[in-house]
Image (cartoon, rainbow over all chains, first blue to last red; front, side, top):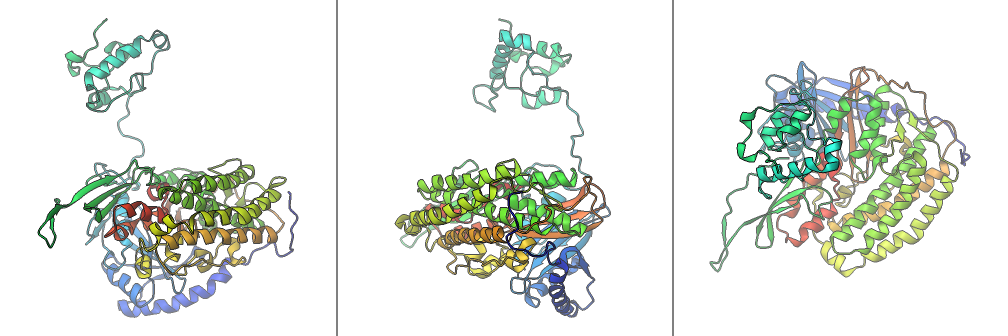
Length: 257
Length: 383
């Protein structure tokens, strides 16, 4: 250790709880107004790290958001997190008050089979992308959202990947890569020449995706058919794989020199 | 990444003299030197005026939140470095802070001061990249060289502290991994002195008074304070619009409870104000680093925390102020070794959302000036 303490002082930091106590009391007092606006008591919970959480039924979301913004002073919707709790999906909203430095957590539960929550875009502009992201990753439909498309993933992506039921490993296990060059043939350059010719023949010069000759590709049967990454049949046979002849275009078969 | 962009059929626009012009759709990116990553902007143009702008993101999506769920807690602290790769130290602080909040423990006071010190250094490094690349976007080549020269000093310090230049893996639940190596404090003080006396005035002189820089940034890309709050902007972008909101003050965490931060606020709300807020924040960070070095307490740097970490059931939202704004980790623990949910609330993602509002009505030459001024980090946007 290089530095001696230059000013003494306690080793313990002041407790977070003591700091939060005043804030939380203020916030709880203010939340009593929310009960009045909603016409029914809203369940409140004091969570870790000094956060107050409330729970709202899905059909009350817009009303609650408007009440939070207009009469309680939560100007900012800072975060929407989807949560998959197996029995139900949840959307957890975090609101921030710029003027009072409050943070409020709002939990909305919706059944997994029919996950629908009204959209908050009309109240908070920041909800737009946040809801799109939650829809993308969890499949929660936000009713009334002006443009509910996928945010981070591709349009053709199937499924919603942050659901616990989503498989992280592909259900179809492909064979091992077959075009890894056999060392002996690599030295002679035979494999590379053969592969290059095949690829050029199948795809044409830059017509579709251009595969650099010699690049390691994945040549199992399924991939072979989809992408047309041509590999000579004998190369596959060498590694113990057989490809059904009917799938091969006879014109593109590598010809012997 | 929504590849399908619903755009109306290009319409005809007729001006007063009866001349007709046609809307044009221009794809900018995803490979563009000024988008600071893989961002695609679909611009609808009328002549040189931007009518609409649709950002398309997701080219760098790595499924980070799913990866957190399938790894033990401690692995996430390393992997979160890659999210906002320009200030990884602060990301780690947020991640381990969320775990600590669930467990109900606090790092020792020395560890909190070390966290503050490295966070402020990381903030300087992040702002240096922001300002340097912004100058480059606007045609000034020198600032980026000088900024990266200064940033190199921070990288060297982080390397000797943590062992890694870029992805530090330095924070742990309950503290930090290493104490300062021999000579580190002197190195840091020398760097701070040099940076404050030489580099900031140089940078200031290079850009602030520059006629071209002024002309391209002043009065361009104005953000209304109400609009900024409604769109969830945080960080320098929000403070440049006159909203005094800084999480280090609003909800101080760690050693910020003892070290008072002076938030840097500008009222103008344009690109120039955002640049100036960053420049001022660097000076403020230098001051905070000095305070941290001065008040650095003794004692242990880490609590005893089990290696196979199993936080109790519970949830926490832990937010810190990065160079770009609020970084929040919403974490749910089910009592196992793996987080049930670890949401990464990124600042850049929400800062980027306001972009179409800013672009409308500006000329195409201002697109880069506006995009550079909100300082997004595509690793942070796409996660």
